[in-house]
Image (cartoon, rainbow, N blue to C red):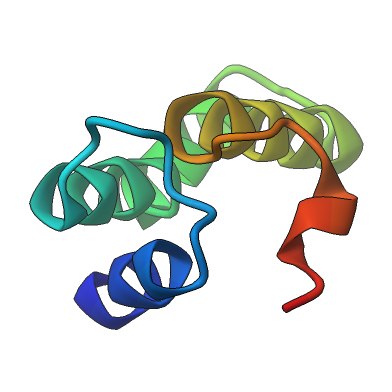
Length: 73
């Protein structure tokens, strides 16, 4: 996740004021298998709902612009 956070920062996508270390931790948390187990397996979330939750959370926490088009670099 450090590599991914660094790439977002290098391409100017990382939200201002967010360190690479904090971005790494956010990505680590949202992609942890435990989150999937908790919401999908234990709580019965549909995969689509889980994917949407992860996507929206990552975009809101990490990106300067909340637009998938901003990731084209």
